[in-house]
Length: 500
Ligand code: ADP
Image (cartoon, rainbow, N blue to C red; front, side, top):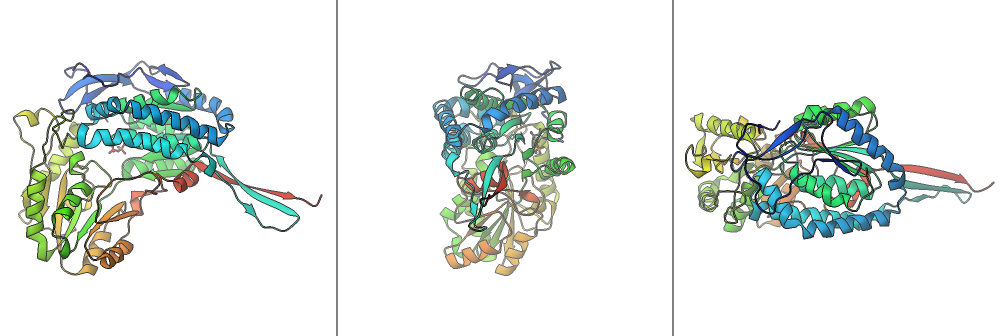
C-alpha cells in the first residue's frame, strides 16, 4: 500500500509531467464513487505531487459494465483495423515520450536518463509490435476428410482484468493493453497505487483513438480495488504482474470461476560467471543484469552471482570500481545514473536486508551498506548498491527476493555444483551465464531452470521474445505473438458436414 499521506509536504509538479484528470471509465475521466483519493509521492523528495481517485468495488463494477458494453462492437472490428489504431497510439506515445519519461521518473524514482526514457520508448515499440500482428490471429483447417470442413478460429476471451505493479508501470501496462486489444478483448486495468500517473497518461493517449469502454483504467489499492476486479464474475481472463504472494491470491480467485490466468511474478535470478570472464565487459553486464541503475527493482534482476573461485576477488574488485562510480541522485536530474526506491515500506525492507547482512559475522560486505542518514541522499529513498560475499546459497539474502540493490556473491569451483545452486530456488524467471566458451555457456543455459537465460549479456526484454517464468515465477508468456495468442485468445473449432 502507498505510504504517501495527505499530510505530506506538497510539491509543485515539475515541468513537462502529466497531471491526472481522474481515472478512465467508459471513455470519461471520473472520480471514485466514494470521492476518496490517493496521494502520490515523489520518492526522490518524499513530497506529495498529485492525487488520484481511490477506486473500490463500485468503481470496478462501473468499469466492467463499460467494458461489457464496448465488447460486442470491438470484437467485430477487423483485426487489421484494430492494429492500425494501436499503431496510431504508438505514434503519439513516441511524440509524448519525454513527458511520459519525466512522469515515470517523478513517481517511481527511476532515473530519467538511464531508465525512464527507455521505458517510455519501449511502450511505443510494444504498441507498434502488436499493432502489426492483427492479421496473425489465424486459425487452421483440420484434414478430417473430403466431405468435412473443420477449422479453428482465434476468438477474443472477453473482458480482461489486468493488474500491474509500480516498478515499470508503463512498459507492463502496455504489455497488457496492446496484445489484449489487438486480439479483440476489452480491458479493465488497475494501475499500482504508487505509480499510476504515467499509466493514466498512456490511457489518455489511448482513449483519443479507442471507442469508449474498450480500455478502462482504475487507480486504487490492492485488496480494495484489485480484489473486486480479480473476483468480478464478468471478468473472463486475469493478467497479473507483481509479487508471487499476490499472484497466488489472483490464481485462487481465478480458480473459483475457472478463468484463465497469466502471472508474471518474482525472481531471484542467478548469474554464473566462468573463470574466463574476469573482464570489463562481463562486469558491465553483471551491473546491467543486476539492474543496479533501477535500484534492482526488477523481477529480472540477476541478484545471485556465482563467481568461480579463481576470479572471485579480482572480479569483485572490478565490480566495486565500476559500480561505485555510478552517480546516485535526483531521478529527474540528467546526471543521475541511479534514482530511488519507490516508497518508505520498500526502503525499510531493503535496509533490513542490508542490516541482516551486516550483522552476520560470516558474510563479508564487499561494498555499499546502509544509506546515509544525512545529506542530500537522506531526503529521498536512496539506497546504495551493496554486495555481500562469502556466504553460501542458503541464507535469507540469497533466497528471498529483496527488490533492492543487494547482490550476493557465491563462490564455486565445480560447474555441476554451480548449476545445482543456481537451480536451488523456488523462482525461475531469468538467468545469466558469462563465458567465452560458447559450448559451456549454452550447456549451462539449457540446464538452468528458468524462463529466460542470457549468455554474455544482461539486457531487458524486447517485443517479439516470449517472456515469463518457470516454477513460482509465473504462468504464461508475454511480449510475443505466441504470448498474445496463448494469453488473450481462445480457440474454437467449427466442423461442417459438406455432404448435405
Ligand atoms: P509489488 O511488491 O511489486 O508492489 P504487489 O504484488 O504487492 O507487488 O502489487 C502488484 C499489484 O497488485 C499492485 O497493483 C497492487 O495494488 C496489486 N495487489 C496487491 N494486493 C492485491 C490483492 N490482494 N488483490 C488484487 N490485487 C492486489
